[in-house]
Image (cartoon, rainbow, N blue to C red; front, side, top):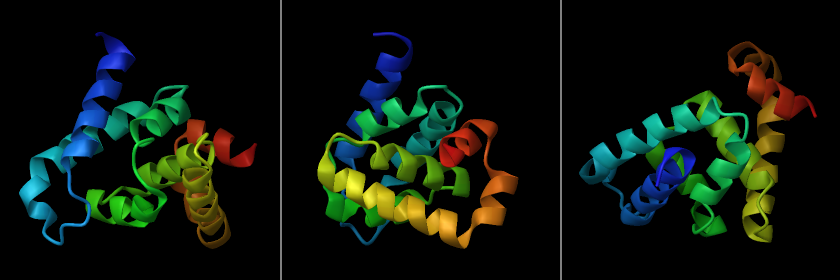
Length: 126
C-alpha cells in the first residue's frame, strides 16, 4: 500500500482501536495525536471528503458528536469532518454531518471564512 490507501488503512485502524465511549481518552493519547496529524494531511488534499468519509464509514451516527469531542478537532478539522460525513453514502452519518455543517454555517460564518483553508471555503460555498 502506498499514498492515500496507506493513510486510509492507518486511519481506519486507529479509529477502530479507540473506545469513544471511554471517559478517559488519555489512555489513547498517542492514537488521538496520530489521527489529528493524519486529518491535517487529509484536509489539504483535493479529495479530502472521500478520504475522510471512508476513514469514518464504520462508526455509528450516535458516536459522531463524541468522536469530535474525544479527538479534540481544530475548527478546520471539525468542519471538514462535518462536510465529509454530510456526503456519506450512509444515511445516518450523512444526517449527522448535515446537522453539524448547518450549525457551523449558522453560528460561525465569519470565523469559518477567516480560519478555514481555501479548499474548505469552496466546499462550504458550493
